[in-house]
Length: 219
Ligand SMILES: *Cc1c(COP(=O)(O)O)cnc(C)c1O
Image (tube, rainbow, N blue to C red; front, side, top):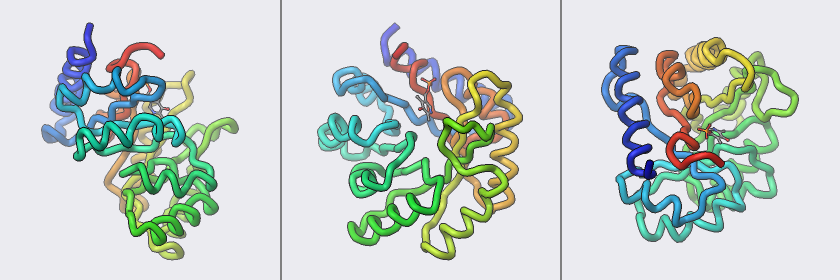
């Protein structure tokens, strides 16, 4: 199958899940995750009408997206991988949404760069719902305090929360936990669900799903 067909298949499944979860049509945005694929592999998705993409590494994204964004200026690019503070400047320059704000140091670095560059990417806080030591994200019990800190100390408008459930667990309880924390923080946006579990995520209230291999193929 071609990228265009797989993309349309994923979009159809998203719409079916919206319907079966009693969500309005268009309630869930598709972020097409293009990590490891080069510009030539990504262009068919852009040609098919997809505009929202995600990458997990700043440096890799710098190698392909400036040109793709010049070709198609209404692209919206999301950073979905861990951010180091020495990459904050580049991330603020290139990305339209940073989904992985997860600690004070990175929040400060991003806030400083937003001020310096007068560029305001939308921001999500990543929550480590499974408390996995190897995974980025703030601990669930610290999330509300951290969101408050970002808002009141740094003046950052946090748009929503993001999580990546442990691979070997039923994702439902993780999605439910993320939705509960968001409710507590007054946040309406939930970035959750990947190729293997995006329909479940939609049932639990995802407003965007991050789908890579189901569109671009195996990595
Ligand atoms: C790679 C990645 C995805 C997409 O994963 P697939 O299983 O290929 O859909 C989603 N979110 C994050 C954070 C990722 O790193």
